Length: 428
Length: 96
Image (cartoon, rainbow over all chains, first blue to last red; front, side, top):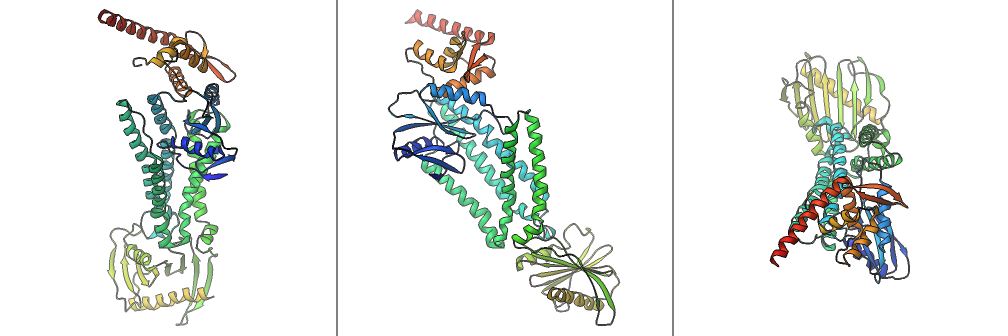
């Protein structure tokens, strides 16, 4: 029988002893443990006492020490305990209730030091590894500006502060608080106090709800199912840790070599993650469009002139700005952002001209929305270019004009012709 | 190293001869007539700590069981503690 795992944290793992005893009385003997689920074997109902022991002699960067493990298990088994299951952090021992065997831990102070040491070697160091990864990944994302939100990597940045908080809260603040409380108890000759089953369940439900509330729900509600792409860095992180642990177990190497391997894996995964998030596959499966090849076009304008231009597409955010396309000719370049909703379109409009791709000396003038047949319009006069920005509902046009001396009326006509090209090409 | 606890004292004392963890547990139990009992988890933690602090040394391994022996430093530590305990007993005998 497989059931979801529980009480696996250092501050509540002792609750497992009672739980496994109850299960063995019901005819289920613990066989395998891991952070996600427990596997029970069906047996005849039996009265067993359990002892859950933390056994973590090495850090993530060390080759597992089998000699110490064998030595300890042999000592416990000679004392009447039988090993039922284990993972990287814990060992589960049992003995018939009727057998008078000595407890595995007979000194609370030593037990506490062991928990503290295990915490520093496991959850704390894993938390730090996560933070390093998240920090590096956040460096890939762009700032909170209009360029950022038209790029998928920005979505990672969106989720990272929440992940930071979850890791720091769960792996550091909560555990440290428990350690400090018990350090004080030990000093005063009191017994270690573990979180009760109820408190442990409460924390577990709270943290899951927190994750749902802080990450999944708002992103889903704002930008839809495609937001699940924000989970990719998290999935990658778990994958890296998994691969890294396998590599560490393969061969005994100095700690610093394993650390370098870890950094190498991070670098590799960052590259792969970025490539994946910008790939046509991700754009397609997370709600975006596959990018067509640039399309050279020649048309005859209403005044009889012919115009050569390239109708181009570029990688865009699969969520916030699903479609970004551009028209390039020798006189003009128009970027068209089709935002997911009005708020995102408003943000893009406000941010263009403020962001650093314009020099600081640019002048932003508001333009008449009636004259420009738009909801909002503005002109950015930079040192060597003019940019007109138009917002029409959820669509933003950013128009770079290479000829600064062009007349306004002439400009309006040209822009209208060009904007019409987007529609024509889309229909085609 | 702080003052030795009872468990620490007996482990270092018994490791004047080569022994593995379970042997030490049994001998302490017998020697103290059950007054001092050390579980395997506690024994393992103390042996690891002593080994790191060079108070004991692993001399061999038999069927996965590590066999230890006290070092010169370990002997010095237990002798200091022994003298401390002796003077405490002497002081107490003068009064009680």
